[in-house]
Amino acid sequence: MNSNINFCDLSIPETSEERIWGKAKELVAGNGYILGSEVNQFEDAFAQYCETKHSVGVATGCDALLWAMEALGIGKGDEVITVANTFIGTVLPILRVGATPILVDCDPSTTNRSPSSGCGYYPKNSCHRACSSLWQTGTDG
Ligand SMILES: Cc1ncc(COP(=O)(O)O)c(C=O)c1O
Image (cartoon, rainbow, N blue to C red):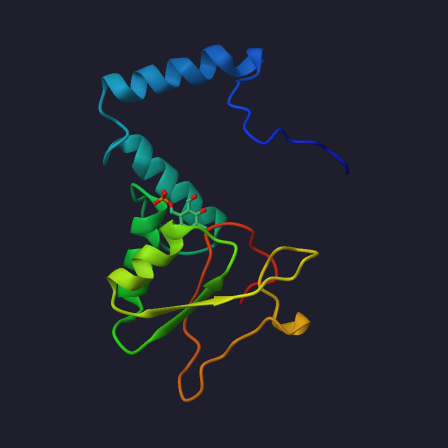
């Protein structure tokens, strides 16, 4: 499949516009976007999609990374590997938990971290607990 996606296209297809804006207005009017039933429904559906028991919606990508690292007990003295082509929102939560970000190079063909292409970094004397990336899943891990 070959499809072109514009870099920043925020337009909504005409056929979906009324449905999307209608739901957005409903959510804002009912404060449903913060701890509302719609959030619970999304969390349940996402957990099911991921074939896991639970899913927790958070406000930002930084929150997601921060809380995931806290849940894993990552902190001072730990190193967290992430890709050099990420942006500061990935590195800030790593610093916030007191860990050291390790930026590794990427495979030019996938733009993902790829240990098989010689871009891997594994700290000595530590176990590999987390790699941070909110997007471009595939070869990371
Ligand atoms: C790779 C990566 N890390 C971290 C973030 C942080 O997300 P936010 O700006 O929602 O905190 C983003 C957001 O796009 C991201 O793409």
